[in-house]
Length: 124
Image (cartoon, rainbow, N blue to C red; front, top):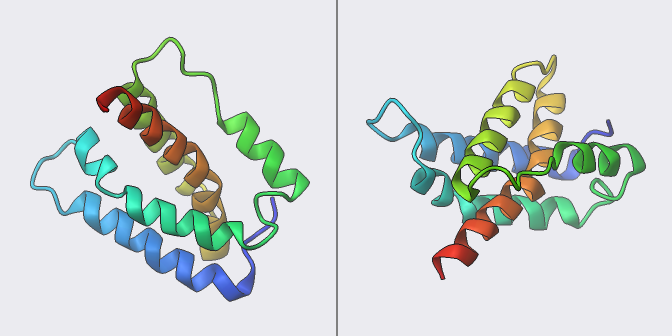
């Protein structure tokens, strides 16, 4: 896995903190789909920042994203988003450095956005 460019690493990390702060701000013990959907604009900003580099196009990262983008046809759209979020959390917890943590988060961004878009298409 290729890590994020130094020039954007801190920005992605700050936005990632914003995502986790927004989700953890709830008084509920369980994360709600609407709470995840409320972070969409932050995920979009992370995607825009990371997409200006070759991070997503790097062969290793592209293959990781493809493998993480598992088929969710058997799940409803909300379950697919929730399960992707949980898988991301499990992967982030295996990181040994902050740079690895940030890169793993960035790998999940396009997948989470895809899941959010699927939910929004149903709602529209």
